[in-house]
Every structure is written in C-alpha cells, then in structure tokens.
Length: 63
Image (cartoon, rainbow, N blue to C red; front, side, top):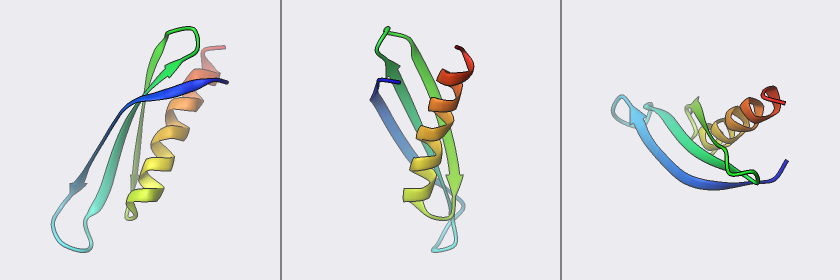
C-alpha cells in the first residue's frame, strides 16, 4: 500500500496535562483516492499513529 499524508491536524480534548489528544490525517493513495483516519490517545504520538492506522485500515477494507 502506497500513500502520502496529505494533511495532519491535532487538538486536545479537555484541558491540562491529562487532556486526551485527537489526531486527524488525510491520506492520499497512489491511485489518487483520499481517505481519512482519526486516532485518540493520552499520548499525541500514539494518537497520530492510531490515526494513520485508521486510514490504512480503511484503504485495505476498500480492496
């Protein structure tokens, strides 16, 4: 599966050090199709990775 991250956004749900991070990615596949993924975690790096995996899973499900 070949893709580029076309866009990436993040924000916190809540306030302070215990806020949950939310990451959104827009993936552009080699065939030009665009898919989105979302990840949520206490850690922004983990949320980002979950967002990418969410988008990749969508790509794999479409066939």
